[in-house]
Amino acid sequence: MSITSIRLNEDIDKPLEFLAKRLDRSKNYLINQAIKEFIAKQSLEGSRWQDTLEALESIKAGRSLDEEDVNAWLNSWGTGSRRSKPEI
Image (cartoon, rainbow, N blue to C red; front, side, top):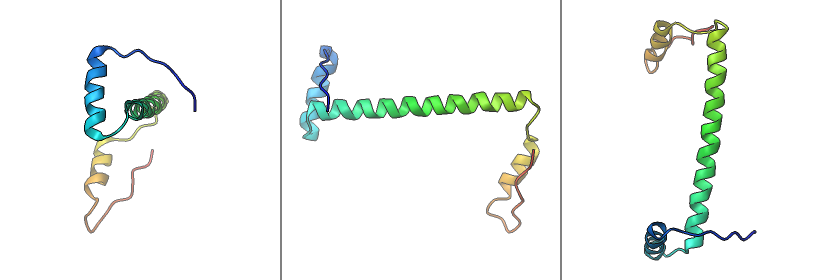
């Protein structure tokens, strides 16, 4: 485990101290949890951005589905006559 020093603004430190006491956790624990969540969120956003770029490339290459076909497929879910998924 590494040690990193940070300076907290008072508008962060006081609520953090209150929250740590209320949750019976250390400020260190809460800061680590917040950083973990931030890293996970950034990773997810990066993945979503990559998916978006790939989708745009598909559109540029002419690979897309008709909206009506997709909606008909989705609307068939949970019915007795589920359709097969539309193909590009």
